[in-house]
Amino acid sequence: MTTPAPSPTPAAVTAFLRGVDRRARLLARVQTGDAQAAQRALAVAHRVFASDASDWPMSQWPLQFWRLLLSVPAMGRHIAHPAAGPLPAIARLPPPARAAVLLHLVAGLDESDAAAALGISIPAYHERIRNALPRDALGQPDLDVWRAWSAAVKRSLEALPDVAPAAADTVAKQQTPHTSLFSRRLRWLWLGVLLCALALAATFLLEPALRAHLHDWQTHVRVEALPPANPPRARFDPMDPALQPDRALLEDPATLMQAQRLPLLAWLAAEAVLPVSAQTPTVITAMPTTDAALAARAQAWERLSPMARAQARAAWAEWQTLPAAERDQLRETANRFDALPALQQQALRARFLQQPFEAQRGWHLGPRLGRAWPRIAPLFAFVDPRERSALLQLLHAASDGELDLLARLAQTTPPQSRAALRRALLTQPPTQRAAWLQGQLQPPLTLATARAPGCHAQPEVRSRNARISGTRSSCLSSST
Image (cartoon, rainbow, N blue to C red):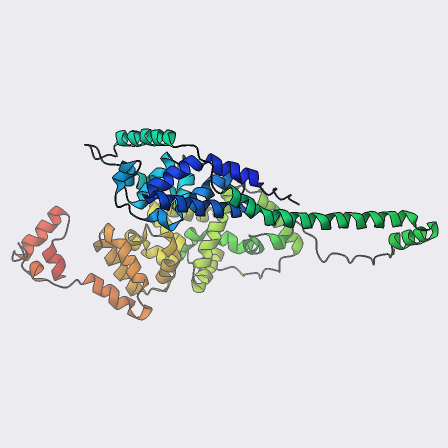
């Protein structure tokens, strides 16, 4: 428990008020502009400070005293004749700026305590000081004026006589009730000490038998055996297959193998390159995976490199995005491909690898989108990762006619407009998507395009010019 700080004595309060008396008289005289008003303000501040000094630690006394003195109403009025009192240059300032300057030059407070005494922030206090100073030729605060004010304050303080604060009697009167209250509390404290001493003596004067009986009663402990603990419902096993995050692909290794061959199977299914003689083997239904088999697969999975596991997860995720009908088609294609001799399988893989890189990337989307990918790739090659899932669903659900329209848009849409086109495409309802795509291919004919230079040339000339330049003219594109 923290011991409360002792209350300050009347002598300490009197000594503090005596120490700040000369500065307080000068500050009050300059801030009020009137000697009698300054004396009354000091009397009020002394009286309030003496009564409340016990509520603050002594380190806060300077801040609280100047705050109380500046809170007197007479300290905030304008001075009618500033030249009649001390420090006339400072007395001409407005009351807020005058108080800020006096707290630093006269009271000797630093910027943090001065700002706290005024109830403002430190930047606001700095602004008051800057506004109080006149400007030099460069428009900056004149520091020579500040030095002159500081010298004038020093001379005024030295010229003031030493007068003891008139609040010494007030301090004694304010402390008297506290002293009598302390005396009453001290008497009750001594009474409590006496009662404790009597109780301690009575304890030693008790009969030995009574003391023994009291000791047995106080030290008696009831001992009772606890029931046996119930066995735990489960224990943590780091090798438990149920805790494996890749449990889904480990339970279906056949599907994982097909997913890892997705680009090849999609190309085989779309291009129909399998020989006709290749018959579909009988599919054997897989037996449910046992815990032991799953645990063995999990251990083998953990022995793979992080790169291999990441590639397997990516292939599994691509397989899951395909429609169910395409997955069934790829399973059938895989069975037919596995029934071929090894040489034919190797030849088909070599034909697949001869395709350009972009074409091979397209087969990751399945047989249907893989065939259309070279035509629509410019429109969907670089997409926002947040839009990828929605665009994949849209492309899988798109009809063949919509894919053809997208292929035409991929050739006519400039690169800087493709992102906006994709975002607008995602907002279209499925029933209106084809009409919207058709509308993007037929921009409205304007008067400028109808009268473009060279539009009245012969069709043969326009066609020849287009072949030479490698591009289509605006006139031809608007006519198609």
